[in-house]
Length: 71
Image (tube, rainbow, N blue to C red; front, top):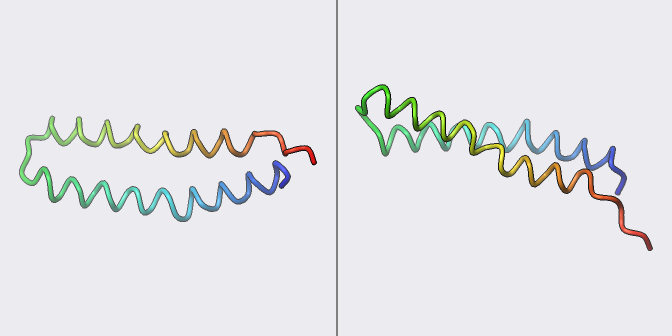
């Protein structure tokens, strides 16, 4: 599969599937786990959750830029 095709697939999956699902999951998790928490706890939670979404995207970048296998 070419790099261009991989980039297109990854971009569509990330923007239209991963980010909305992750955002809804984190919002629901915060609503269930930290209801009525002080503002600084909520801020810390969202700061950590806001950086954690990068991990799967970093893995997809590694996949996108991998050289195609030689046959």
